Image (cartoon, rainbow, N blue to C red):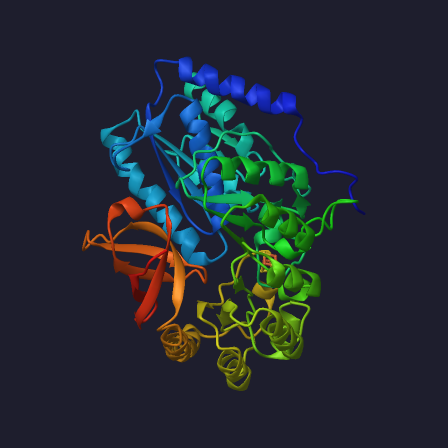
Length: 470
Ligand code: SF4
């Protein structure tokens, strides 16, 4: 059933949290410097920006390094086993540091904490962790931290709240003055059989469009050049709330604000509407870059994955967008070694990749996640088989990427300049409208500006060019 409005946390709750932040800042016997270590996707990266915003209000400043920080917080991911293992490995590494600096405080939060039993596991196996919390109570961070510091006891709080709620008006410390993330919705309803996200992020909750538009206007006024709209499935934005704008309508309104570039991710192919394609084609500011995760090229596997589209339907959506937005740059995610995947089925993924011609692809070996349907399926694929398959797929995509990048040579692209090259200060690097890195000779005063660059050569995953007159 649809909600009548977005489920925002009461303003009094946020005000109370801001009170805890001030109270923490007033303490003298507390950590003063912090380091936030982030794993996983852009949603997590943006959550870390919120954590940093709260840390700043709590009177803390970024440490020069993880080793010297008074407080280290790990914002974890559990989408793949190796992300989880890396996070836990780093948490364990701090155990030694804490022996020599007992005042060091350690926190663990994020998706990994939302898995059943993880709170107890942290208490049992990681006695040097002072604070642990999940994704649904991130907004309570200051209160929990205050509790841990004042009581000098460990605090673990993980809320199991599938419906979740939406915290507005929390402080954010953005990592770039010219790029900004805007979360437009939380959670996912899709339950792809291999994916843990719906279990750890809860059901779809859309932020009110008025809030999103206001945030975008504010960012525009602050000089932000590019916004990235975030959601697990942005194409179903608004469907959970009666009378809310559709994603395409939201994009059309954002386009009017005048921010130079609008990007979004992630789009589920089943929900890529004609309306959205029309808006992209007609817009001034929506980048012609679309991340459209296909995951697999075989219909039996797609069905088993519960993706709710066929190979044919996916290709039809690709054709539809290319018809209206001919220069669109397509990227994707691919899984190899899904349970039961035969050699022929894997070849279907290879042929689909050739047929679409993605600019780039993120390729993953299937990673069983406890609690998901696919983890209990028979015929889990041997690691050596998956490794061989992924190598083949990477080699195919590498060739396609090179050909796609070579096709840009001679074109003039607009590039949002991010930074000077670490190796050569005379070289600038930025992203073009297709989200591809472009390197070109330039000076640091260009950082944060959009410049026109003529593409002169293509590397394996980046382009090279020369600035031309604006
Ligand atoms: S759409 Fe599927 S893969 Fe994406 S977050 Fe939801 S369940 Fe996971």
